[in-house]
Length: 448
Image (cartoon, helix red, strand yellow):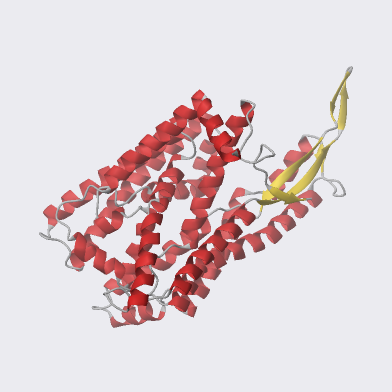
């Protein structure tokens, strides 16, 4: 009853109802585009390669999860929102490291507009590179009906235009819908595959009982264990994503004339995972793309084939390197986001202090210590989350896994769902309605 009442309240608010319908409409348009194929590609052969355990198949299967199945079908939306996400990450890093972009980031709305324009240009360039590499990979596997520059031109044009359309749809959701547009498109692409995952698991389990058919057999116990493991991982993600460390800040009282200012207390929240999924994405790009390229060139260069074979995703070397990269990128990205010295100076200028900590240098050292300890927990959490799918494949077997759903995809799904729920919660509370929880608010867990 509580859920039904909350849903009724959501559709009772005119502004929120319009945003929801607009977002759903954009996602429907996106899902329609996912099923429009590019001319000249053998989609049946492409699907077979993705099912195989080759390096190219693993890479395409990994990327296909985020495109909502568009990559496996070689449709006009095959690139999805990935070039735009990569461009946004690159521009964000440039904003912390290059003085020109750092200055633009401080110029308010005008600076953000210029940075967004640069991001679009960079996404356009990346989509050209990605689509051309994809075309070359398809030709190398014999999946093109009429290979040559004619096919490459049309293929690159189709995928680049599709990427620009997806980018525009995401921006429209951010402006007129609810939630972040890019995240919502990735969320829709991942969630749209869940019914297929369930059906494929049932087919695998049934083939295991009947001992017939071309599907690899598995019993119902293993099928249930896979889904229970995913549910347990989801619960852990929610638990850790909502966790935060609250640092109390006390502001001194100031008397100006006959008026008293300050004197109140507040807190600074530090999330356990302050870097999001970016360390996992960066580490995955560094690991997966070179291995796939080595695999494609292994016939010409034997040494590359040996490297690719010894760096399998279920192997110990691969997972150890990925673990180290995620931890390193986590601390690198956190250092770009948080500057303990600037944070301590800002509190000091506003007349604030942390109880028991002297303002200035001691406060900066305190923040640095907190970020280091939280970063250790957050980075290990992300590294284990990224390695769990590989561990499941090693335990169950690559041929018996009915689907490949990485911890990164689950993290994106849960994160977007929580963020969207929080936005709707804010609308409900603003209009004096009860929210999703009986307390009326989605609260973060924290400790002082």
